[in-house]
Length: 189
Image (cartoon, rainbow, N blue to C red; front, side):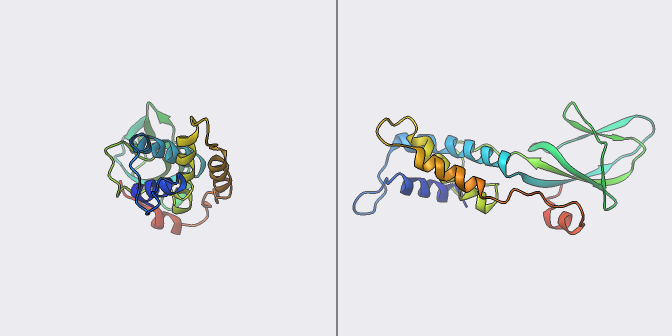
């Protein structure tokens, strides 16, 4: 789903259409839309994780650790693969991955990612970074946020819909048994 699709859905939920079917221009709603979608997507990414892969070419050496830069959207390690096998014991030190210097070759770091920030200048063609089923929940979050300060219209129906849809999502993480997952999810690095 794109940001533009999400905005259109919010306007439909809020019934921001004239009797002739044209969208009514409400600057108050439009000015808040990007920030609300940013918050919604980041909330969703905390619930249903975005998993990305990053290849690190190890430079090797002797004694101690080599610290490797992590992707800008890195939140937390999910898994580390070396030679097709799961590895552990790579600490994060000062925002960098520490790998024993004697290791060479490459590792593939699977990590939980934070979506990029949506701002008022983000184009409507921006594709949400959460999965499609998770993105379908976002308009309900945003509609509820728009109505929260309204003393006349109750926001709770949209909020409940968001919470219920979010709870129904499959948030299971991929198993660690198969090599095929890496090839399907690899985004480069």
